Amino acid sequence: MHVENEVYPSDMKKFMAAGPEGPVFMVNLLKFKDKAEYKDGRETQLTGKQAYELYLDAVVNLVTDFGGKEIFWADVSDIVLGQASPLWDTIAIVMYPNRGALAAMSSSEGMKKIALHRHAGLQGQLNIETINLPARLADLLREEEID
Image 1 (spheres, helix red, strand yellow):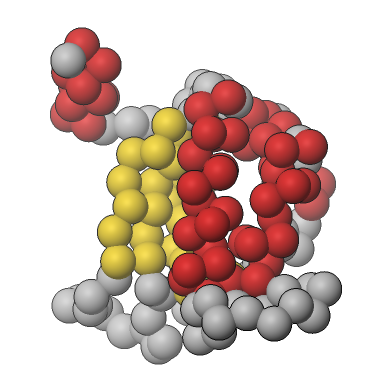
Image 2 (cartoon, one colour; image 1 turned 135 degrees about the horizontal axis):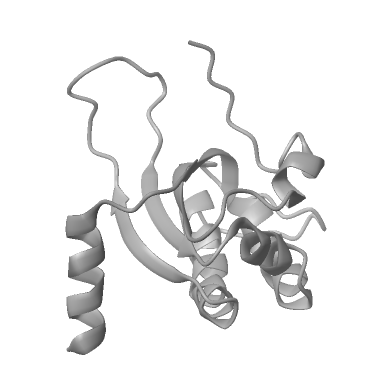
């Protein structure tokens, strides 16, 4: 199996394509730089994760604006079955109403304003698109909306 982290999609046509019907759940495997590196060369004491968290604080609102929802966010501690090196630092799962909403958010003015922090902090990532939400998770999400 060949795995290659990327910061930006290598195939923009695929990324911008309509995709499957209905909601998609993007599994994000994130790897951060040790030290943030801004394109404009500014000096910073931020770690890559801290720079990415500046992006995260703003992107959560964008996700909501485009009909999505943050589902899960956690740091990776170990792999207990299989092998990968180096490990990703964080896993996040975000639901979008469809791939088009993700593409629209990614090319929005709001994203352009915050992307500098994403680029400064992110060494690379994998985005794994999943569909067909398991029934139990769908029930949990509905219960959360009711509360």
